[in-house]
Image (cartoon, rainbow, N blue to C red; front, side, top):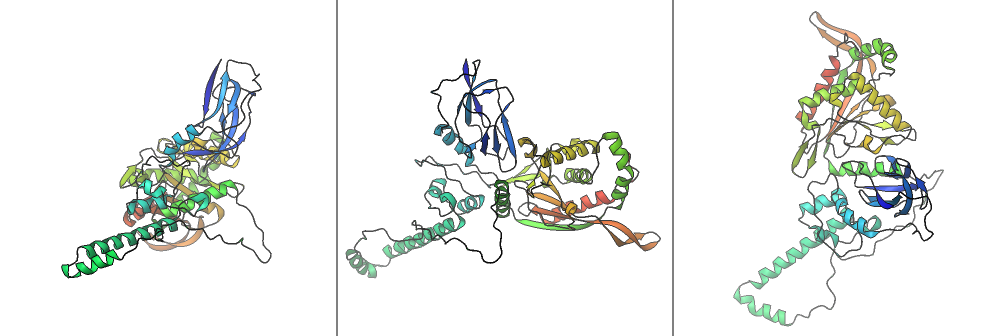
Length: 463
């Protein structure tokens, strides 16, 4: 018999930790290989962790609702033994060593411009910093050890933007005072006697001077009271994570949105003509989403910067085109499953991937890997009746495209015989992009390329 470790699995390149939602097994329970041991949650998806071996749960090392870094041992399994376990089996406990060891990885927060390596400290806990705070620290030349000493007034003692800005202002005042003292000490000789006399009469303070960087007692606001006929709803865990992800996106990227009007008449007529035969042959309904993805992939091949991310002053071009598609869940929350290597799939393959991921999302069957690795995102807001929108970038990507509702409108058609007015199927497309690396010229050029790709759709195309 031997003990094997069950680790918190790797859930994607941008995920560094997961929350334990529920243990399905407890010490002494038998478990088969690939049988679910616990449920976990990340900021993207809930998932099950299966057993890697068949045996008996010897020990579980974390409680439900604990946040655990990726790669940490979360349970031990005794293989080659019976289901009986000694009564002295330890209850759920924490082992700090894996937490501290892996927490060094957590400090490399995704999307921050340049990695900041934490200096060794004697602090018993790990502090987390938002990308905004880290960006300010980098710009102001504040080291990680210096950042650790700044008192935080945020949730769980975290350093907020206000805290670090007050620290920077206080540090600037100290520098100015030091420069003034230096000028005074190197003044002309006529003032030397006065300076010496002033120095002689100076009495050092018994208490350090008060400055903006000293810890202060936070002013806690009284509980908010609501008047009138209101209903108070507590955000669920997923909605809280979505809210944080959106705020982080605004604080990280310089958002710009461009719009274009697109005539998709050919696309609509072609789909209407082939959709029954397509479903009969492939067993899948073809929607507009795989057609949009196909057009986007072709244009990203021409303008690869749209499939990239930023690491400090480096631009990371993603050669694997993994297209995320924003999907609304039945509870109103949003999730973005990812079609991996979309450029290697034909229209049939894209259709099956779109349908499978959408169904898995709505039934809660997505795997952690299904939401990871996206390089560009499409949001079909037209399915809810919106004609246009300004979507927020899905970090660490640099662009997201939204397609509005397709509406029939009278449009001027230019032909060799002259202009005419016709009823056409029209749609607005919007592209939000990170202005740090995507300028208006590139963003607009890419958006127009997607529009032309859809407008020039081949109506005689076969399936």
